[in-house]
Image 1: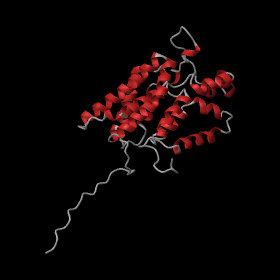
Image 2: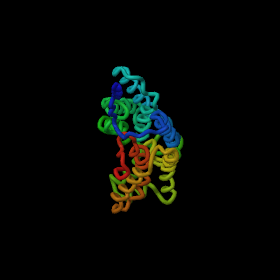
Image 3: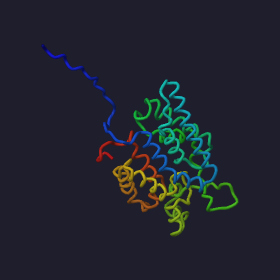
Image 4: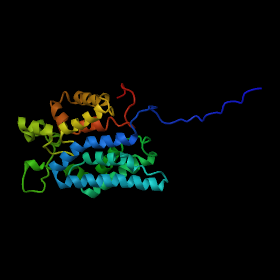
Length: 274
């Protein structure tokens, strides 16, 4: 008597990488959000209520857009996994503090709808949604995105805000000496390091960005390959300019290296690729 054939199991093909870990998507996203809190709080303290309005508007736009897309696409609600909050927060941290809150809200909506949900949701997007949102805002609100810089409140008193150019902006418009004059002496370089300078809300404090990155490294959520690649590329491209240290401390390279180049969906999977 012959035995009955074994039942065939379905062959399921899913996007790579095919890894298993005890960390869930939601836990990873909320850890990233938590790691961004130090630089977020510092940005609000340095630039005041306008920065908080930008952050709130961007996150509200991102979360609202994802909830609406879930409803229209008849999907389960995915905002609880923290990825929409992460997109809105990352977008806000790359924006000038004097951008109108409603512009940040529109940017958050665009980032989710056209940077993420149009591709099918988390894990299917081709580009970093926060950067898609920022590119949209640069094209749609160029004046606000280029003159919305503010001097930190620690540099002035009794005034709501003073607009000014960033050190890199001064160097682009004038020259390196003008940027160095804006920075001042050794005290100026220290302000660059800790984040008492004009810039985007979340990029100003290298120390606090690094603190958040160390949390993610300790938990094994990110690796150093991609960030080191970013720093090496920056050093290579600026080594002949005489302003390598200015680029390293004045731009958003630290935020990009640890919180964007390490994005699980859009970053290279292999170590040499990173």
